[in-house]
Length: 224
Image (tube, one colour):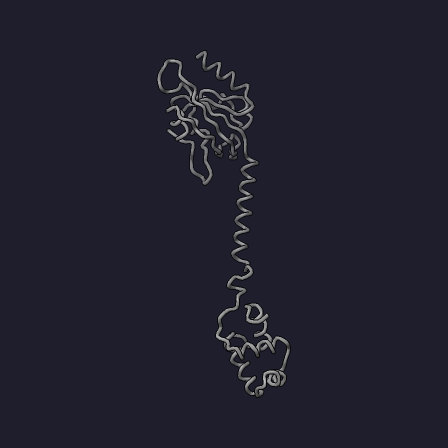
């Protein structure tokens, strides 16, 4: 008992929140910084099971605070437990992200199991919010990259709509604003042949006018 009182006194000197859990996962001590961070008073929760009070979750919503949780059982076996982030319940009802470090206090009677497991924690709410925001931004950027055609992507490379070389020549003339007579003179073909080429172009591109044909051809890389 004197040893536990000594540990309690040491924890009250820590700026980090800290609490002691006994072998039945009951809270045996709760320091002043823990009161300040999570809002629970020591007299309210000492003697209660830690998992029932804190209900901690890790990233993805997985429950980490439960009976026989991995950090507790690993600490009892004397294993080193890596620090981890957990979203803990607070007295106000709002969850709070904290970073947790677990230390197993060695026993005084020579047995293999420690007397108590000490949990140190500090608030990391701002860091977690920044990480979440950064992930959201990265997700938005990836989505934009998928939605906006990139140079050389299928949306900007010439598409295969079955136009002949002569029809491409007619399209280029249309893009320059040439009328039927001008196209006929430039390509040395009949006016009726020009009109036939234009009709086939409109049909293949699925448009209804020469202007729409030129717009479609430019957007899909058929002409410059």
